[in-house]
Length: 231
Image 1 (spheres, rainbow, N blue to C red):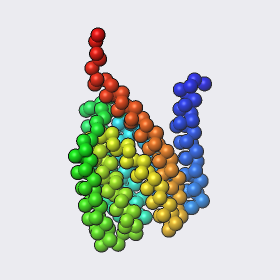
Image 2: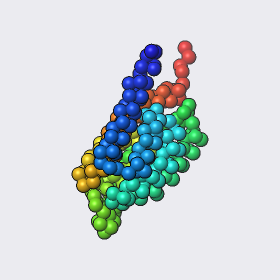
Image 3: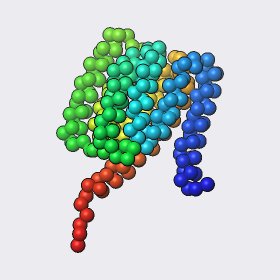
Image 4: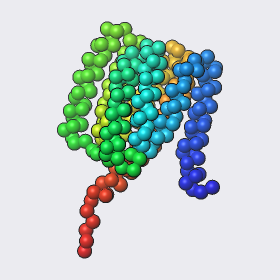
């Protein structure tokens, strides 16, 4: 077996296979509806594409987000469900289009935010989080703080991904940790959420891989922009 094949086996094939098996086992044990775990299997493919910062992950993900919206609504995660419908679906579709226009191999040309943009994004998120929290409290959402945080973080990351800001990969890791925590909390109330907890752990693993891959891609692209000195 070549080093490349061995690397792919341990990096992709084994983690995907183990996760898929655990999703099936936990779904059977908790009597989860098969229709609700179908998006998880599609997301296994999407997450592997995301580890490579592949633009086609967003095309598939835009369609899959509709199914997630229906599932999140079922569990009373109303803010997250509306994010699936109104943010993830259109944003990922537009992301694929914009990334294709600025394509670089199977990905896109990445850029970095200015400090002014980072400050503006932080202030905007804080204000929007408070407004979302109030709205969810009035809607009697089951998990108001968690739901508000997941909603705003997801919105911010979607915007950063849309414009190919490399900082999105920095935020994906804490969002992944929050996703594991959220699924753990929801599972305490609804045991059939266990397959989603399994997937969220796999997703966090993929987000770590995507972080390092994006750093490599960004460095590679910046090196191509740097003129070579001729002596």
